[in-house]
Length: 500
Image 1 (tube, one colour):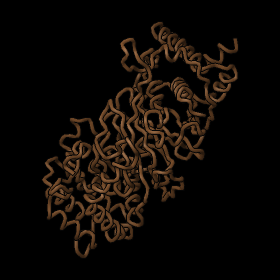
Image 2 (cartoon, rainbow, N blue to C red):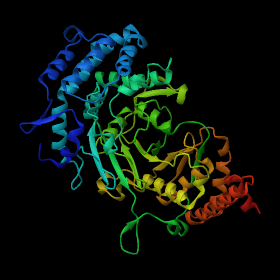
Image 3 (tube, one colour):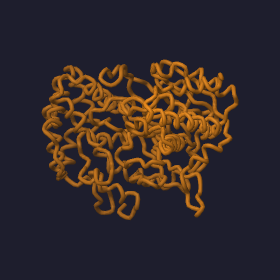
């Protein structure tokens, strides 16, 4: 085990050690604690939120974890399980769920060893073992849903060392801040409901561990070569000269990306740090997706910050929860049975791609470099998996799989929804996806998106011709800003130039 390069990159971020060429827990006392937990409250004496909180502190001390765990985090665990759950729910949690999680944790070292053994032969010529997928280097990791369950159990008990994660641009992975957010914030119901999604996931896991796999891929966009022969991003000339035909657009004024009935690549409006505020106080599009598909959280363990030409694609993450609302109105709404089919690798055919948008770009979003940044970022996300990987990995080559997206970077990030919708359309088309399914989430600014896309398609515009018009409009917006003239929306502008 100690000679594996992939394991060496991740071992410092795991609570395990290598001993006698095998992975193991570093503390016999911790193993004793876990063994007692598997036998239920009569042996472990863990029968309340307070005793759970005490056990988390004890387990962390046993592992000599030096990072500080706030008192609010420990209070949050006690509060949730002692006051926010019914007696029936609490009893089930401590009698059934905790023992099942402890069993997973006891098996964690052997599960990880089995993972590495199988990863060498999963796909010929492609590394799939758990490792840090560093920026500027494409790579993919395959994890069984059982191993993900063990990893997330470590997160629940806050067992991951965190000292060097920030220095290496890795997101937080323990659940302490998620539970700590319940303290001193009033009846923070959306945070409580985020935790309900997570605890529901563990309840389902205690009943039946899913047999499938999930893949996490860092995708890198390098299509062109400059005059020196080095790879470079697509530039303004690449987009201006594209003769690719624009794909069809299906506009949905209601509904949600994750409820898309046709198989698509589903867009996660991501933070450059995967998961965003999922394990903190965040509760918008990306954070909600990570709560209803909690296996996505596993990627936060080993995927550092995305570079400008990178995206992260996850295939196979199972959905476990229904929900209603958004942001402060978010509510867990019950169990969800995911009926997606599986591929030859045992992955569900759910494809989720994380792409991060410019934050608070203001008028600068109309600058040429901003247009390029956003369109290239989207193109990176939308290109087919098989572009840079073995054909054996390609689930969605020319088989009619489109992209399901919406107002990427237009809510808290402040992007222009009209501009961003059409930039995404360019990228979907250039990636040769068969269609774009666009969810407007009721944005009034997009009420005539269908009219505009139909008009553009009817005129036979290519990607290059639409790009030139978006640049022209953006230049006018920049000039009007300097002159303080009233702005004309992009859609109205496109309609007017075609009607004149």
